[in-house]
Structure formats: structure tokens, C-alpha cells
Image (tube, rainbow, N blue to C red; front, side, top):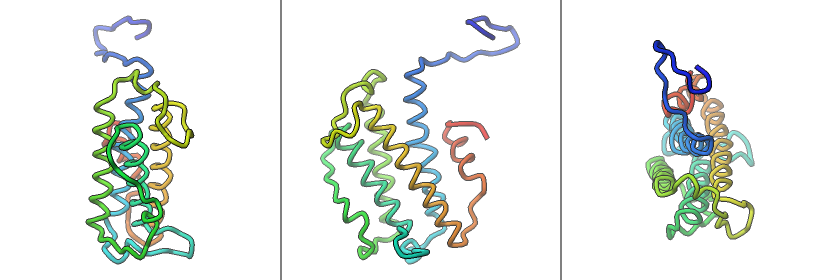
Length: 187
């Protein structure tokens, strides 16, 4: 079916405007697929093993999850959504804190919830607004979300790799399964 022509045998769905598609793609990955993958990677670890490092200089999964939570709450929650979150970036990397798996998971869930709330409050045209990043790294709110998505994807991949290096059995299809479950793509 092309140019709005409809077949009697093919059921069509309305196609969103490209800008709506871009926002939808960010949302399904930032609040769906990537958090599902991060949680799948975190799930087999226990309170002690979340601090495991395969080598010096490699962040444990606990640090990756806390860093992602802090990044999302800072750049999306505070700078786009106007929350009162105050980031302590150095604390995100402090392995001596030894938070429990439950505490880390709760912090990550809180960050994803903040992102959902912010995204629910925005209209598509709001993504073209100037970024409120005080360091001026991004020009638009859309770039704030794009950067947050890429950042979360990078560290989620590292978390999945850490789980596999630790010997935990994760599905080889964890990426596709999480995307399909969130509506981001089909497997």
C-alpha cells in the first residue's frame, strides 16, 4: 500500500509523523528495552558479586547501574524535567559504598521512572526547545534524550558483558528480546 492507498485485505495503521517516530524510538529504548537489558544483566548478581571487577580499572556492574541512574536523573530529570535531584557523580563510582543489589536496583528504577514522567509531560514540539544543560553540550532537548539513550546503551552493553564474563547465563538474544518486549523492534 503506497501513497495512502488501502487494500481490502491489508489492515493499515496510522503512520506517525517522523518527529513522533523519533520520540517514540527514544522512549521505547530509554524506558523499555535498555532498562530491561540492564535489569537482565543485573539479575544474576548478588549483593557481593555486583562489586566484582574482572580487572583493575573495569567498573563493576553496581557502578555502571548507579552511574546510569545518576546520569538520567541529572540530565533528564533535573535539566529537562526540573526535578530537584542533585548529582554526586564521584559517589556513583565509589565502590566503597557497597550498596546492596536491591538499593542499586531501586535507584535505577527511580531514574527510569523520572524519565517516563518527563517524557509524559512533553509534547513532540518540546523536543526542539533549547537544551537546559548548563555546560552547553547539547543544543536541544531532543539531543539531551539522544545522548542519554546512547549513554545508557553503552553502559548496558558493558553490564551484559560483565554478566557473561562472570559466567552468568544470559540469553544470546537478550538485546532482541528486550527490544521486542518494549515495542522497539521485532525479533
